[in-house]
Length: 301
Image 1 (cartoon, rainbow, N blue to C red):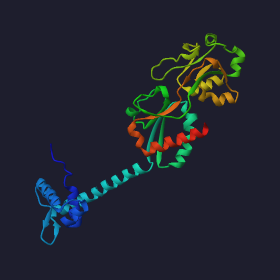
Image 2: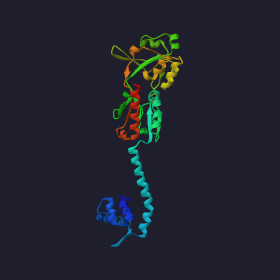
Image 3: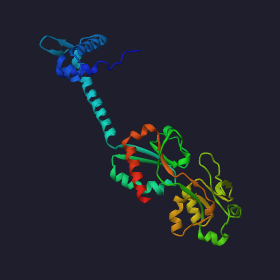
Image 4: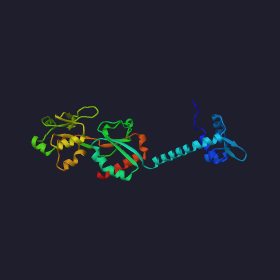
């Protein structure tokens, strides 16, 4: 294995700066003998002397001076780089990459991001909106947001919202034309706007509960989409019934644009969680994002 080309350069720079082996040793916290041995080893490896030593002074040789003038600026740049890393550890800055599902945008991202950018202008933020399951480590994300049951077990998860209750909704105009379903089985006589998973391509079967038993219904419909927001917009337009989490439809229901049905049969799922690898939690940029998200959502709750 070839020798490390950087071995001895710290000692070389210290002696060249101080023009003294004793002073260089003191600045490095080692003995003068250790510095002298390291310099001799460096000179032997290079095949030339770097210093002229007398009883009164230490001076650079011509080769030593040439080496010193080339590596001193580089050494200063390296020191500055390490000083910059101190900033990353001690204050929030850098580039924060997040993957979030569509349902998290109005609930978490939109209310949080303006405050976060104002509080931490040194952090740039990149948000990828994707309902598919994402390997955040492989894709280079700092963290993700997903429903709790979809998070891998080797991730650290932090709750952001209460549990989610699923709901079937339609517009008042749709119900005026087609009536209200009284049971999940009645959905076979209605028009559903169905959701296709972006990754697997599977069409989601609507899930229900009755007397402690879980079951699903393949609600028929001639409209299929792969985006939660589009489901909501099409339902408000009166084109059919949709199956969505309560956090996505609350505003539309409160405003009268949508109405809930089949509530006694709807299941509950774990809420939205932020998740990230264990090694990421020490990053100030991620810590402050999670702290602000937690504070904001507690206030909303």
